[in-house]
Length: 158
Image (cartoon, rainbow, N blue to C red; front, side, top):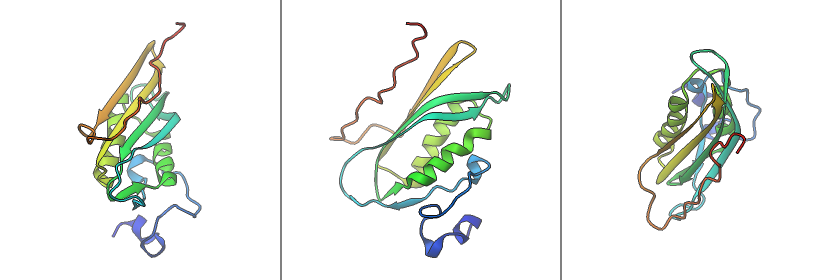
């Protein structure tokens, strides 16, 4: 049993309805999952984090991104407060844009086991180059409506 599990009220969510501190690192962040209230239904959930921050592993300077996570739930859904704390834990984490974006998507996919998941990391320019990073778990399920993520590529003065 992990340290975080011992803090859970009778096996329930760790953060929901409780005061929670920002985790010191992504590895220390506990993501909570709750039963899907529409189990068996095919639908899409979107989370957008327009003010995501991590640190450049070379310079230690902050990097900023607009992160968009889309997923089709399976048995569980991610509890939004725990997701917010998990994303916030990257504020002091050094990582390249690719590693951070793909790592978030893979962790959510591995732990939650959704039918499908994709993540878009729209990183603001640093050194004059914007970097957009995309990852998905596979082809979306047939019949799932998957809208555009709605984040325009960086245009500069355009």
